[in-house]
Amino acid sequence: MEDIGGNGDLRVHVNRAQRNRQRRQLFCQAFTEKGNFTLIVTVLVCLTGIILRLVLPEHPNEKWCSAGTVETLVCYLLSFGLFGFAGGFTNWLAILMLFHRIPLLYGSG
Image (cartoon, rainbow, N blue to C red; front, side, top):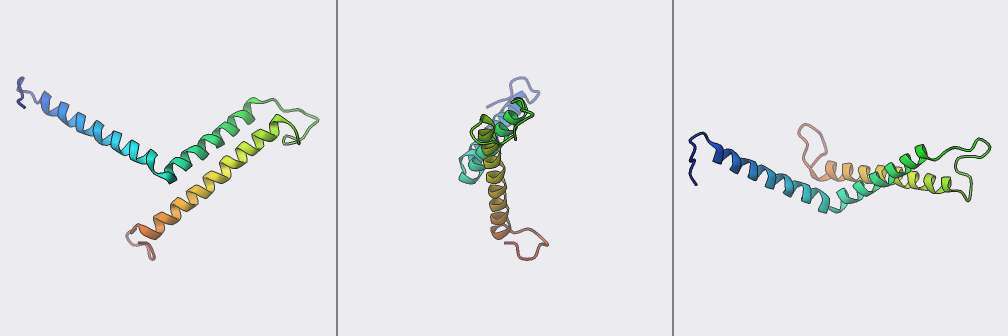
């Protein structure tokens, strides 16, 4: 390939294409790993619970998570999302600390 214009446009285009290809590979790799996928799902479930909690009106005479109401479903969604994300993040951090070498940190790697 030649630079016809003499100003390096072809080289910039090739570098951009390589960077875009690398970004796509990193993006696909991040979503195909099982741990990352489950963290994303739990964050989405948690955000759904938070949004529904903010959107649904509160009834002054009832508890928020009283049995048999839509609010109960929202409480469960929020709980599942929060606890799932906390557990997944803790597992990710434990694996990172066990198998990856962190400089100047005793016991890592």
